[in-house]
Length: 231
Image (cartoon, rainbow, N blue to C red):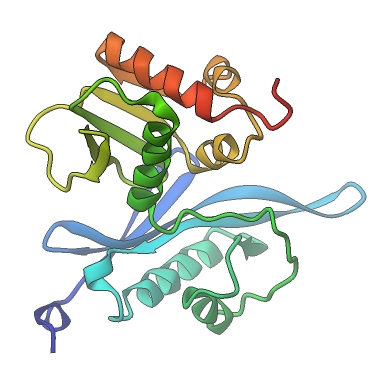
């Protein structure tokens, strides 16, 4: 039996703006979580209901298979009922383990769409995305520590060095560049649905850090993440 199985996690709730975060905390660490926010769901001509839109369902790898996600989801459903929502909704894949958990809590598959995406592993996705930039010949400034935040997930730190991108679990210095956007914006950029310059103009993307490094990374992103129509 793994040592973690003997520990007890505390389920907590935290509100920030319209978002509510429900998470399992163990030894001061957020190890399993989800977020929800109010959305209007149209159910007919001129008729809407208040829906709790759930996202960011995730558990740290070493804390999986302990039922923590189920405990977090149960607390979230309890809070959602208390707040008077009419229903809950989320996008997910039918192939993942969590899909069975959603069904246990009464959620039903009502829409099947290839345009529903979910960031299950932000660290891997960020590393993959930046690795593609280097493969496209965008390397040139190295080494560089980059802090990427894909809301509502926690920040991911990666190090660019010698043409490779590696995750950094505990950075010992401030990042050279910080980049923040929502997970939806990140996916829209990756699928060519929006250009980086438009996302920046719409204040969907926030930069921070060394100006020269920001300029280099922004130019690399703009070259790689361009709309499919070339606009």
